[in-house]
Image 1 (cartoon, rainbow, N blue to C red):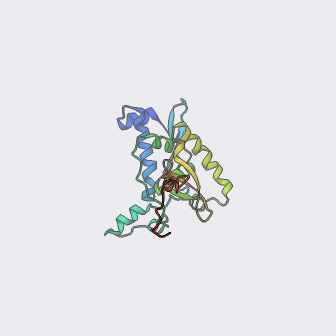
Image 2: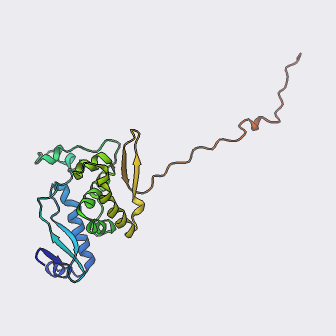
Image 3: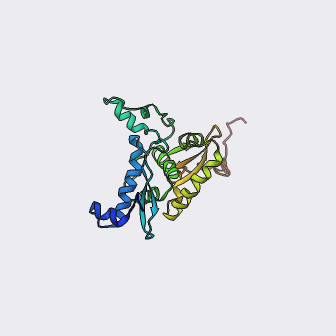
Length: 213
């Protein structure tokens, strides 16, 4: 099929000996392309032989997500701004920016297996750490929240298949805005215990009266 590259042909062309390495290569492309304002021009499919393959879809589809805040800060130290992506809104101060996952791990395999919209959503969430529903709708070009179902359903299924379902958490912030958080479950220190009888230590203590009373 024209425009489709099978995994064996790709391995032969790149001199790769193991199929797993292709997941690292394609996952790394899917992870880093949006940081440079490039739309990933291919999607993962099943080839005619039933094996993994990639199909060219072009670069004139949806725009890439905004450049993460950490890259804009690096540019601000001396390098000039080179594109409109630098004016994209940064995460709120309370949202931690997490480090990019290393290529070739389970997360890269999830990104490779996802449809383009779901992959973009996951890329934004992993980069920012937190993502509001309104941000997700805006960056994915969706008008209504119901449209997120087709984005989240394959994402949640792929995360479960790779043992990462405990990383995706739905959230509601102090303003009542719905969203998502990426990472392990946040642990909260236990509240200090209060003794049931705080004055028990005074029991049995006799108060000596002053002379004359």
